Image (cartoon, rainbow, N blue to C red; front, side, top):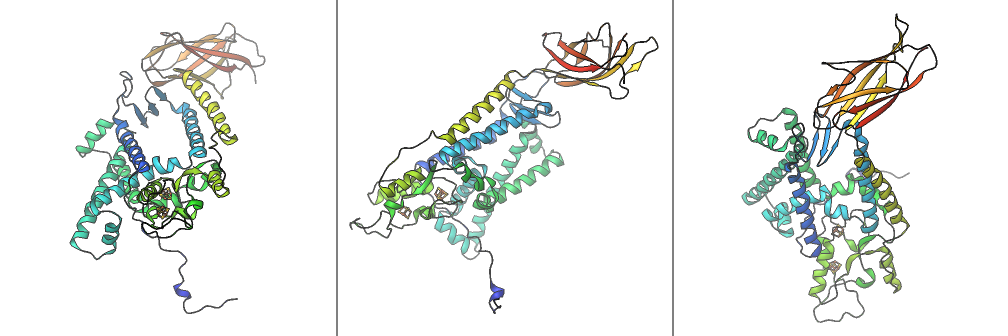
Length: 473
Ligand code: SF4
Ligand code: SF4
């Protein structure tokens, strides 16, 4: 057994997280990231303000999750709580689509579209505008507290908080009428619940994009951990062409490139990396595939008059082939991608069928459990049922309820207002609850199967529900 020594108390089990100061870079992938960021932010902040006319009895916000009424609206699609399987299907479809894209293009979602990436990029951009590029930021952060440092940090944090506040505010707009809620914010008249959500989300956005940054991708995001299961040797990755780059070393202008690699060890690729890794060490879990190291290296290659692509998008197989001096083509269509396409078609087809055949009317008839039946003084047997009618249209409607399976029965509908089985009223976009009694002159026998049919009197659309008529225990 080892023995303790005097220095054991100083033993550090965890390395201190180094702060990363990504350097500004320009190029194709940086431009693509700007475009992705602007599009994502425009969609996120803009969508709650898009109006969609659904008539008088429904909200006119195109995308809305109305918790109070229990509805989710997405342009022409309206989902009721009873149809939550549609949301489940959409989530399954989105997850498989993500797996499919990942198997082809690697972590393109992480590098360009993930919320954490987009907002971190935005926060770093603000930081750079106020405090300067990498070296200036580092110097400012590590330098003594001066008036200038306090001024710059204060402005940065105020802008971060403002962005975080708008981000949180936009999130709650998806659950409320956007123009009304914005007005309420300006009038300082919002409910404590909404205010609580906005404050909480502001704090999390500020902390995640301002401080946690790459640590969210490395330590918190589960996708980073299991994405390797979607990778194979033909998935596009960002890699360093070791065969071409090594043996690396500083290079003086005008000297020969013979007997050395093309990497001039300038570390430009490391300085621009938002997660602070060196791609020359091989594919790493931290890499979010943003492509900024490609831009940085291409820029260097241009300066030293060498072809671009020392760091590039390519497949692991093609990188390995370089070492063998062979070349294979991109292999997009392979068993893995076929499986994903097959599953996408099945799930997508099912979802489309469900959405296209979605009924505006839904009938549920639940047989009373206690008593199962009642024997009336005139010898008839009566069964009771609870009826629930979903009127998913935006018009008030009258319905006719009929039945089949029991001869010569009498149907009595009980509920609010003046109703009969011929004119059951259900208000627009709501659920009607009724009780019905069905009595028939019938001898005790086995339970009879009975089918209830509800018909919309205006459109003749109908829905049916199978139940039973019980005559003996
Ligand atoms: S930017 Fe290119 S040349 Fe410079 S260190 Fe990275 S790989 Fe080498
Ligand atoms: S290694 Fe390159 S692609 Fe990966 S995160 Fe860093 S800059 Fe982006």
